[in-house]
Image (cartoon, rainbow, N blue to C red):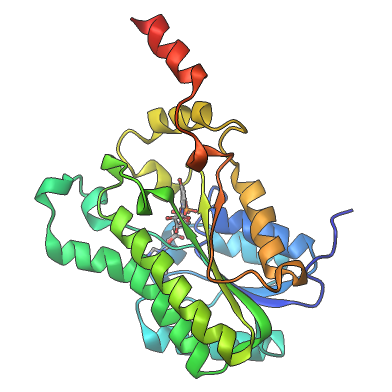
Length: 272
Ligand code: NAI
């Protein structure tokens, strides 16, 4: 029996596109742990993805919202409160998209209008989301807000391109809003830095498959699967982490603290 860590909690989950999405797994785990939630994604994702199947599975509503639109987010949180019957205990931002990566532009020849759009979708949307939640007083006392990030915010992973700066910005927004929300009503704001994961967003990065294998060997525990990421996120929505805030928390099988891996050295030696 799954522990009912989230019994009675109300939430909003952004970013489930299909069953590969990390947000999909988060929704599954939250439902199993007793939470009620609404799902949201960009209106365009309703056509390409399978979010309605997820909603049907858990008997919850989908409220389309472009995370770069303040108006859409105001509507989303107001409707979510009405549907769920009260303020929100948790909100999960699992959104990322890079126009330059998608269109194959190298980092040294980026289109800067696209870069700004990437920042808006992948990072500024987190600030917009927090601001709408803050001003509309939508978060319950001691609630939890979470964003998903990647270690390229702090170390150079050349093919991650402008998403690296997006993630650095996202992590910084989470720290700064963590202060304001903590002072307001004890709400926590954190980011979880996840291992490479085979999703639509992940696979869009050049050389992702090879890198996935490299990271798996570099991490003593191996790459963390999406389902385990979801379990970790659920602990951060629960009352067992009420004093964890303003943190970037690694969920990466140990990758971020490795210097060299004998397994990779052996492989390189074998190839020579
Ligand atoms: P995904 O492609 O399944 O999810 C990305 C989501 O962002 C999609 O559902 C997409 O529709 C949504 N989105 C894009 N533009 C939007 C907009 N304007 N408004 C609202 N939603 C929008 O991929 P994944 O991997 O599950 O991504 C979730 C989060 O996890 C992202 O923040 C990603 O950067 C992060 N992450 C992913 C890793 C990976 O290797 N896949 C590793 C570490 C972090």
